[in-house]
Length: 378
Ligand code: SF4
Image (cartoon, rainbow, N blue to C red; front, side):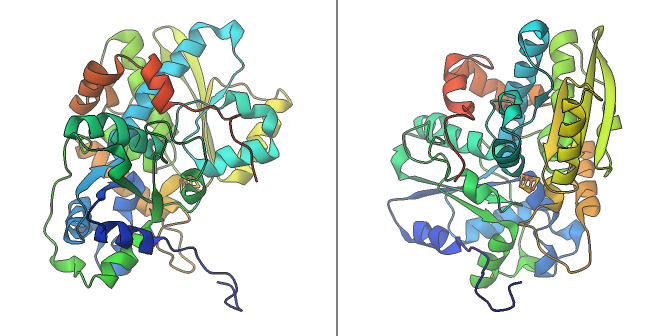
């Protein structure tokens, strides 16, 4: 905390309350994977009772029109990013490796500002939050017959860097308006719950709305370090072999180590991967790549140690590091999920059948991908 009070945490909750009070607005809220592992901490709810269903109920009590799951668009990100990786691997001579994940805006900004020579190696896939906004103001708006300009899209994120991501001027592909109107943190949604005098301990469990509320275990593990990599490998394995991977086939990338590496066999092709969390580790990995000391095909980078579970927008407990305990919640949800692979998500199958055609189609490129050179750092 700033000792003089001159620096305050940015609070966007009033923008959400204003939208909820506006009868013209259809307020759509998406909840990011890591938020479900932490939102109850500052509301007196034990971790096992702070279910995502109760958070859905709290948002409905506030008057939100549709409550959806960012895990859905995490599955969508995997379809796009996994296909992007396979295309690059199929044309190895024409591409520079490794390909880096791009779902963490803290990492993307670091590359652009500090190591711009690696910008072209970032996946062009938008983050799940941004993909969600683009789909809400296109596919979902068409499905429901809603004017996309009347949709107010809110994301609840474990992250403060997302506030800058939603303001990137080129993230407006669906209708010309921002894909996501406002990004609030886990701390802010907790503040809203308190401001509305909602007693979290008495909330019922409620389901997400359809069709953007259906997700798989692969979507939920996005919130833990190694989760994006594992989710991508599960789908890539299926695409190249036609088979369902064993549930723990890629578990070597789990765990809180700041720099993990592994090599997996995808139908006879060895794929060398690394997973780093924390920007200090990311800097070391880039140095090692530049010096030719290591070689990888695909690298997941999360700016926060432990990934989004330990994100800067999560509840703060002085002296405690909870990324591991929260990550365990997410891995547990994956273990118990009926569907564990993004390609098995029926809502994902429907959106490709009815709207996008296939990953990396022209429409998918237009709405779900971005050009990292189209905006500059300020
Ligand atoms: Fe945000 Fe941290 Fe997650 Fe990156 S790792 S998306 S900065 S919470």
